Structure formats: C-alpha cells, structure tokens
Length: 148
Image (cartoon, rainbow, N blue to C red; front, side):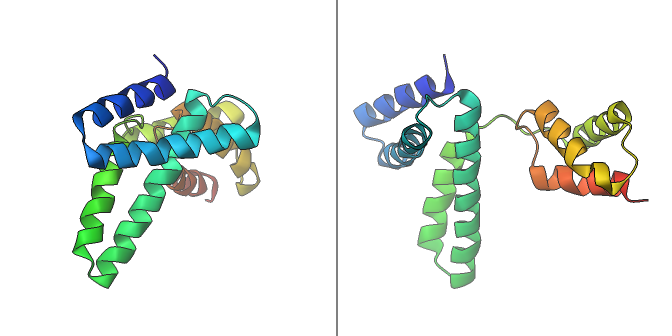
C-alpha cells in the first residue's frame, strides 16, 4: 500500500470515527499533495509525499516555537497534535552515529577532499539516507569532514 493510499484510508477512518484533530490534519496533508499533483501535473510518489510531509512538519515545528514565545499554550498543543499525526507517516529517523557512518562512506566512495566536493557528498548522502536523516544534520557533518 502506498503512502498516499494509507493517508486516504486513515482519513476515511478518522472521518467515520469523528476524530476532528486527525481529520483536520490529514485534510491539510491531502490538500498539500493534491496541490503538488496539480502544479507538477503528475501523480505524487511516496518520495514526493514524504518531502511534503517533512515541509509540513517543519512548518508545525516553527509554529510551535513562535507560539511558545508568545505564550499561546492553546495553539502550541494544537500544533503539537498536528505534528504527532504528521510524524506517523514519516520514515523513522536514523541516529547521528549512523548518519556519520554514511557520510564517512560517501566521502570515501567519492574521494572527496575539500569543501568544493560538498554538493556531491550532500546529494549522495541524502540519497543514501532516503529521507531518514535531517538535511541540516547531514550538512553539518559533511562540512566537518571536508574542512580540515
């Protein structure tokens, strides 16, 4: 079952059980990938949907930070609930040690020696982690490995 089918199925289940929080969150996710499909004129793949989910999760995380600064506990709890639901559909994140091993392997495989190779190393590392690692974390590790 594809990620899209899973989301659609879960949306219908939430709708039938009248789970308003899940309905609202999944409606937003469905809207995001349908807009993607309209704009790109193609069916959203699992990779596309994961990218969309990561973007939505980041937006929720940013909102949580801002609402906490503003002292809006009511909005913080809603955003956290949204984030929890979105996170269920994202791949499980790999540990920092595993990411470092992958970065080391990519640097060795590509023979990267300077910061000029950062783009190639980043692209290959992101490909190998398949969305299971934070790109900012990858960037930091790659920079540390290439700047000596």
